[in-house]
Length: 66
Image 1 (tube, rainbow, N blue to C red):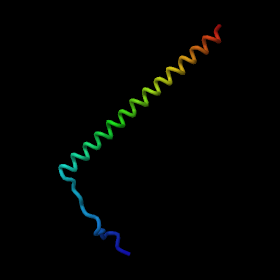
Image 2 (image 1 turned 45 degrees about the vertical axis):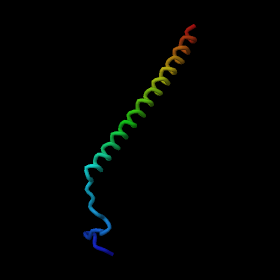
Image 3 (image 1 turned 30 degrees about the vertical axis):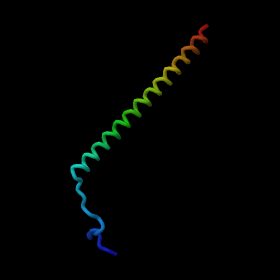
Image 4 (image 1 turned 180 degrees about the vertical axis):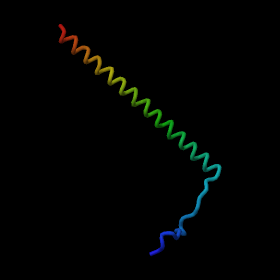
C-alpha cells in the first residue's frame, strides 16, 4: 500500500490552453441555450395543458349550472 500523501504519477497537471478554454466556454453556452430552449418548450406545453384543463372546467361548471 502506498501512503495517502503520495501522488499518483499517472495524473498530470493540465492547464487548459486558450483554445481549450474557448471550446469549453462555447460548449457551456450551447448547453445553456439548449437547456433554455427546452425550458421554453416545456413551459409552452404546460401552458397549453393548463388552458385546456381550465376550458374543460369552465364547461363542466357551466353544464352543472344549467
